[in-house]
Length: 325
Image (cartoon, rainbow, N blue to C red; front, side, top):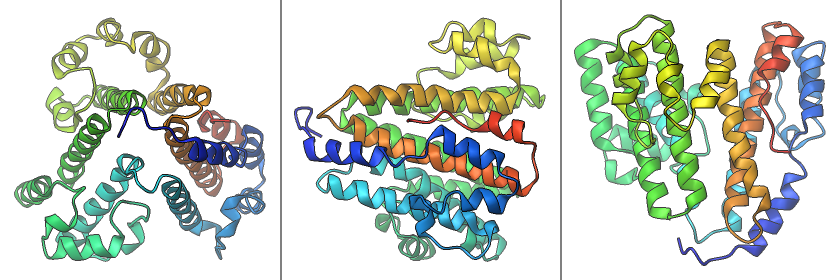
């Protein structure tokens, strides 16, 4: 991507679209709703309401449809750039994991496939079935084969997830480097680092070996495995993690429990994304809008899931992520 290229129309369009993002007030109203159905009704006057569902339990279909529409709309603003592909790789890799599990378990997991990747679902299914990796360029064929081999040897489906998660982050890292955009480059780096920090905390609290962390470690971040190893060996991991750019963040949030730390990581990323508000002609606002929409969708998912499980209102509010608006 040319560093001198400007996007006045795309940025102006995205600024207009930002006005339709769900406000914190709307999300809190959903959290306070008496039921999941009532919370869903509060979305009827928003863009989510375009997708009619028969039952609140089908809310994933509504969210998925809305995100796909978002990706399509943004792509039309910058048709000559593969700018958003880097943010769609996770959908491609989610789908390939589902297809692998579907094949080895001889089950029908169609309901778990998501739209909005760089490869249409049916095209991905056909290419995977025929092992035509050239027809799914975003997918690392060697990683797919490795995941299948590891499962055949261990019968542990977790290896499918860890191997392909590493491949996904490697693809994002490579694409971010190719793009040469500092904003996107830093986002991918932060995402990888925070993902690894969450994994370290989970592994430590579960009393698992450091090898379990190494297997789940994803590339693309600044924090390397040796530092994670030193942190793991310390009773208080924060004494080592303070050497990183996330030292103050870990000191503040790591002792609050995994769920709270996971939310803090999302909010940390959102604070970085908000820097795009001060850009006017570069692609940062376009990227930020995509990420803001994904965070919004996550909040809707959290609220509706909690409502269906009758989680306390205060707990739901604590789990709602920081918004872009």
